[in-house]
Image 1 (cartoon, rainbow, N blue to C red):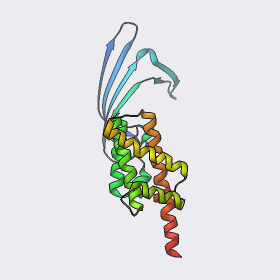
Image 2 (image 1 turned 120 degrees about the vertical axis):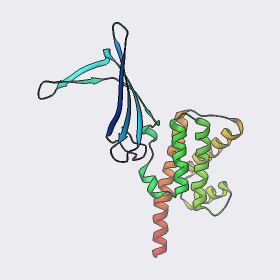
Image 3 (image 1 turned 90 degrees about the horizontal axis):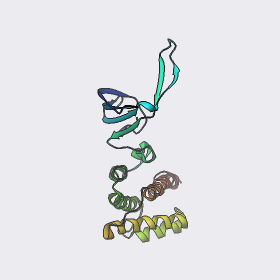
Image 4 (image 1 turned 45 degrees about the vertical axis):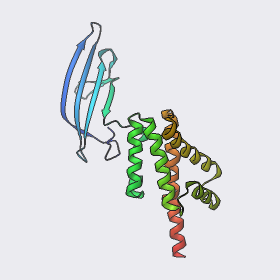
Length: 210
């Protein structure tokens, strides 16, 4: 499964596996409660798995004739993680510690269905990113300069302004957005991170060499 520390799909050792079933006549529900340990970093995951006996299918056989089955299991992992909003190992390498810490908190809030905290976190993350490169306490002023210098496009500036207002609405009016909207805003900031902490720094390094 996806490891929240390694940030990749990786094998897990099964430390505990408790299995019990419930008989409903025509079908049975098998419930597996597992404690898993990542083979790389030893982090612990709790896995809750429910399988309906009517949704188990044989898909082949081993070389010795042993049947191979596939099931349509309902799986929930704790701590909650989501591949769509998985932590980026690349960002851990390129972001300053305090900014990456905020980025991680945003992901945790999003995955745990806390839209208000996610919106506030996105606004905070935007401010940290911009002020890291800007020379003003005024976020709007820094964004104006970035747009003028060509580091962000006019369209991108509009999207970043929406994230500013998103945080303000969450703080002052408890106005929440859908998970889809929050993920889109997260992707906008991830693109900004790529631009500023990768390409911007490369341009700055070239200027210094000259």
